[in-house]
Image (spheres, one colour):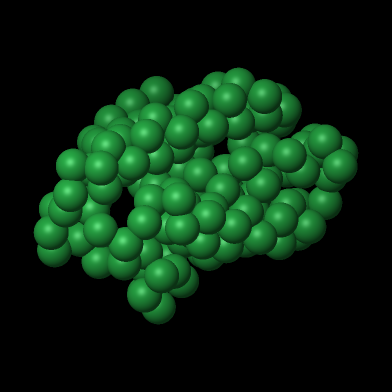
Amino acid sequence: MQAYATSFGIGFTTGMRSMTACAALTWAASEGRTRGELIPDGTGARTLATAAALAEMAGDKMPFAPDRRIPPSFAFRLAIGAVGGWALAGRHASPEVGALIGVAGAVAGTMLGRSARGPDSQTTSGRARGLVEDAVAVGLATLVVASADRHRRAFPPVR
């Protein structure tokens, strides 16, 4: 089951902050910790994904920020959870099962994150809970990347 912990972890991160998970995946790929060549690993990809993650964190506190449970947002989180779960499944694990576990993590992160966050992000306490959620997402993403198995690649990463 430990071979799938990173799959669930990246899915859970996706449920809280989808772009933080995308950034974590690019960093993991740059360290050779992802399966296959699906995740970009260059400096440009890491910079763009990290900037998008920071923008998402800032935008999440705005009054016009959509609910993470609306169909397009929720579907995006499930897709990123699946890709991340597949990419980070342990070396001796089934990537297909990793994808399903990533989706389960995304569902859990979406629902639990929204529940912990509460309905109002416009109050001081709502913004504070949002900042805590940001910190948890970044911490979990960092832990997931650090604990992911190293995968052998057919070609070395392009820099």
